Image 1: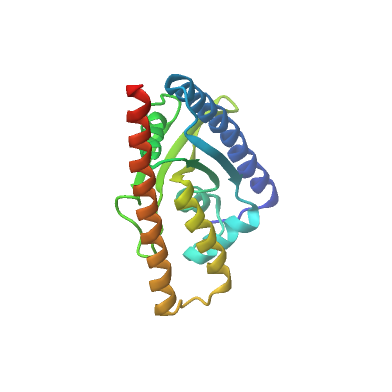
Image 2: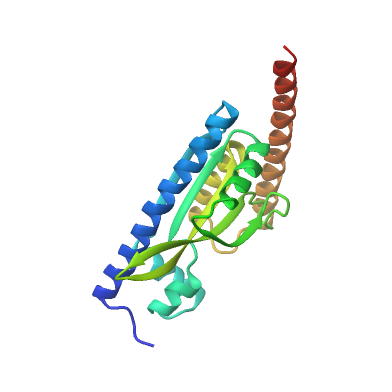
Length: 207
């Protein structure tokens, strides 16, 4: 297999850029429609990014793959990344269902790390979607990753990400335990806030 040349990199990144724009527009429509329906704003914020050439190459190398077009498309699933941060736990699953109901892209796979957290303590909901784009009279599907999580989950994940850059490859056991403990406390906080939210909703509906 031939390594990616400069022209191929331009074509790859342009293709993913087009798909990101299309997915961005679709998510905005879906979420604004949902907000209008429920008369509240469940989404705190949305972040999106497109991996750079250097980041893609590093991830391929970390996975042990040669830098080829085939390996990029087959093994790198998060070149396009979206993060939707919600207020409450119930909002996460509502938004997951809304995204899955869209007819404008395909769901490739999903991972519920809320129900089944990673060993590190990481908690979030991941959807990998295939976005259709038209290029030179052909239809092509481009993969993107969408992460949906609460504010509390995002707080933990952001700090954990920063710590990982400062820690050695082999994280000491006591630090692993501390990170897991913090993750457990985050889950308890989310459960408490969800409970309060349900009480407030019930109180508001009864008035």
